[in-house]
Image (cartoon, rainbow, N blue to C red):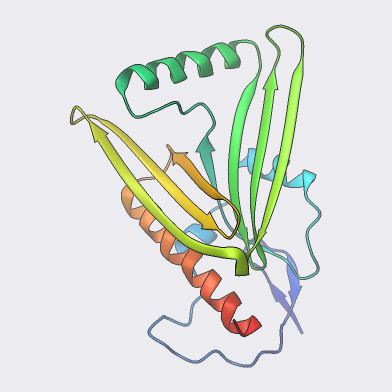
Length: 190
């Protein structure tokens, strides 16, 4: 039986039967964010990844690649670095992509200032390897806010600074990533 995935791809029904109600609604996790289109740069970065059989993208977010710290001076230096890089047609992008089978951290760096430097990286973590997911909001001088998403896996910790999402959206993202992880662990019997 064919079903439509969150981004319009056709996917095979898994045949696991109907999930039991355990305090969560029967809708797909993160329906409000999952229905929004992906950022165009995320789609470009996903061309570097071979998707697994039956794998669909559930959620994605864009992180700040120029983050240096929470102090106003560190933020100013990071902003100046970002401006200079953009002035010379470069970028420093970090994406967190959650699929129904794994978590991908995609990095893309391009610098045209003194020669051309292009670095692309893909890190894949199985959902079973995800141990913790959380978020933090730091404020300095009552007006310089920094929102971060933390992922702790078996082998590595990620601390990603998020600029385009508010507190409620980040909380919803964290809740739904945890729900995907729990659903995957229930399927695999962990």
